[in-house]
Length: 254
Length: 90
Image (cartoon, one colour):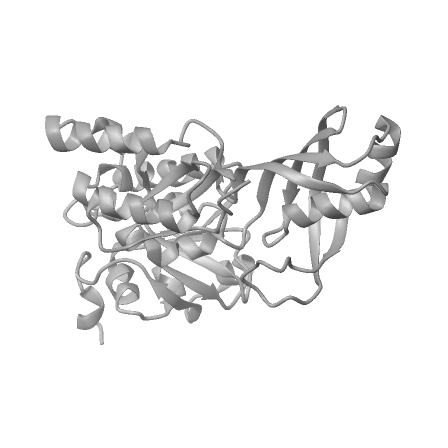
């Protein structure tokens, strides 16, 4: 299997788990074990759109009980003889190998997955930011041996790219260090927040410069927060920023 | 352009690039001091690496864990991790 694999470096490992449960897109080559007409294939594929049921394969890292998964998009890219090329946009934890196998069962001829490429993991896609091992190695060489860091800056993306798909809250400088110490976020510390902030859901807490401070669980929705004058609205769950990067003004106020 | 404006533009830019969008509700106006913190794209290269993610095109053959171990070694880091496993082959 090839394709999009976001790799977090050092501190960024703290939040990369956040992209595991996001939508995935794959391009998959399936080999059919018998001949199938275009119309028959198109009809069979319709059955896999929307909610499907899957039992994780023998070789998998999760409990093998039947799970419900959503196929958001399923597109037939090519059908050439016994080869079928599909583009699949699905929920995290959908097994592509199983999908290929089940398609074969439904068609009555049998099928298996021949090749798989992931083209998207939540915020990371197959675009100009996607780099090969060779490019990483070259960029590192240019920095270490020629002092040129430009390529490395293109190869390594800021950790903030890992939180773009979740609700966001930008806070004042004076609130930053308290959050870095694990405190919960109160309304007066907020400068702006996105409309999708919802109770129980994760939100990224950012400085006004755009630096990730922490991930927290919102306690109210955005509209409610906007009407409030005071009170705790986000429970800090995972602190990202080190302490003492921003001044500890909050201590004086105690 | 103020630092807070640059910070907002950065967050909006990376959000839109990934295919999402931010609808902001502004509660109050405030700026940020240049004396502490840094725009995420202006971190010193060593800090940029330690707070970085590589959108890696996984090669066929090795497992996701092996690939991550190589990256970790290449950069001389104590930690690296990936966002979701990809089977080695096919």
